[in-house]
Length: 280
Ligand code: PAF
Image 1 (cartoon, protein in one colour):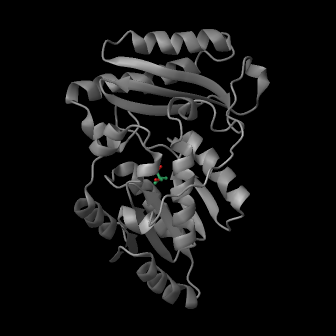
Image 2: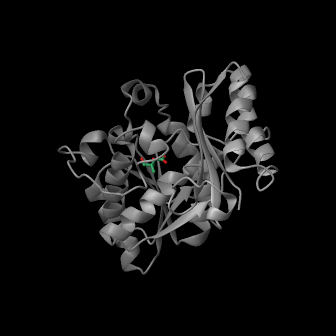
C-alpha cells in the first residue's frame, strides 16, 4: 500500500495504473476510521482494480472551530486498517496541499442545502463540495463511495457531480450500526460509555416511528420522535424532518412522496450525532 501526501505523487502512482487499463475506486474520508468506513472500503476493493482512500480533515466544512480542533486524527491506525482491507493507495495530504490558496468557489445547490444540516451548519456543504470536487479532480476515480448516514451529503455530492459534469459514479453504502442500533460515527469516540448507551435510543425511536407511519399524521410522528428522544436527559434533538428522499423537502402527508426518509440530528452532551431511517 502506498501512502502519498502530494497531488503530483498521487498522479504519478495512479497514472501508472490507468495506463494499464485499471479502474480506480475512491473512498473519501476524514480518518478516525471505523467499521462504517470499512464497509465502504470493502465494496471499493471488490468493485475496482485499484482502491484509493483519502484521509483529510477538511477545515472548510467545519462551521464550528472547536469541532474541527477536537476531530480525532488517527492516521497511523487508519493506515494499518486500510492495509488489512487491501487498499492500494492512501492519499493523506495536509491542508496546504489541498488549499494552496483559499477556495472561494460558492456552489448553488438550490433548496438541497437550505434544510436540515444546511440550516444548522451554514457553509458546511459548500466546504464538502469544495473538497470532494478537489479530490475527484486529483484522483479521477471511476467510482466513489459514500455512506448513507450522511444522507443529505450524498444528495449534495450527486448534484455537484451533475453540475460540474465530473465523470464518476457515486455509490451509496447502507449505514453500519453498533449492536445497540447506534449508527457508527467517528464522533462516537467522544461519547462516554453511558452516553453511548443513551445515544442508542435515537435509532430505537426512529424504528418505533416506522411502525406509526400512515397510522398517524406526519406531524404526530414528528412529535413522537422529538418528545421520546428529548425525554432522555442526555439527549437534545436539534432537528427531525420527514422529507422526500430526492428533493429533501419536508412532506406533510404520507401520500406526498413515494420515497420518504426521516432525518435527525441530536446532541448527546457536546457530541452532535446524525441518523436517518427510510420510511418508504
Ligand atoms: O463524510 C465525510 O467524511 C466528509 O464529509 C468527506 C466526504 C470525506 C469530505 O470531507
